[in-house]
Length: 302
Image 1 (cartoon, rainbow, N blue to C red):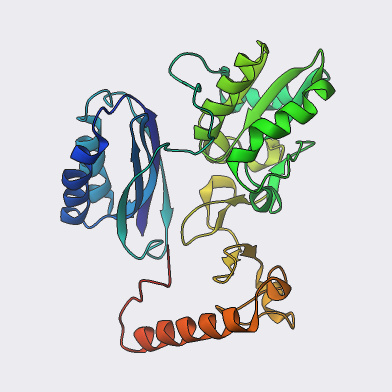
Image 2 (image 1 turned 90 degrees about the vertical axis):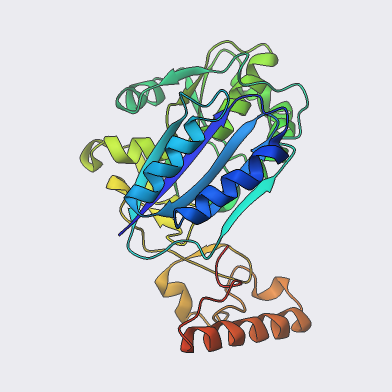
């Protein structure tokens, strides 16, 4: 079993580039794969490895300036969920495109998973899923609003166009691990909304701590690794990924006529050209050849 660690932390990094090399070396030395993002505002990412390797990496990251109280969330995977290790420099560790956002200044009221059901069941509370449309499509909380955003950058415009719907309502927001809500609740508070809440630790913490029999979660939770989705207890879900469009698909979707492994699914078959499909077929061929040689093709996983 592999340990999968999701983490984020907002803290000033004056020179993220100086952190990148030593961090990548530490990951390689401990057999870690996955992706970490570094920006002037902090660190974000998901990585996987042995339990000991992850523990050593987290000790290293918590020794970085301002990261002593970084909180991470661990789960498990039966197979290696990442093909390689990447440490990337970004302008934002989660891209919202709003220059005045600062989660260190103010965020919504944190709500523990055990208290979340009572909050979102209250008649004066509006529940907003801050994730993207394909994530919402495979699972969300009961009665949650879908902003139908394709990227997090679209959320501020969606809020501006819909904020009047929420007059005299308390706002409850949630996302996969909590990082998007750090920014979305700060943004909403800057719009003059004080009664804004968000799920501490995100969906992952809720699924870890709240028993299925007591849950208001419906479906599976999309995750950005080879497992594709997880359910209660953070057990691996049934979804796979279409490697053409990167959208989640169920096992039965592979029986549909539009499906071709690595080339198309019912969600993207009509969205790509014949040239695109030919290129995808060649990539899939190389993946299969690498598999036959017991090698890992770098294009097989993110």
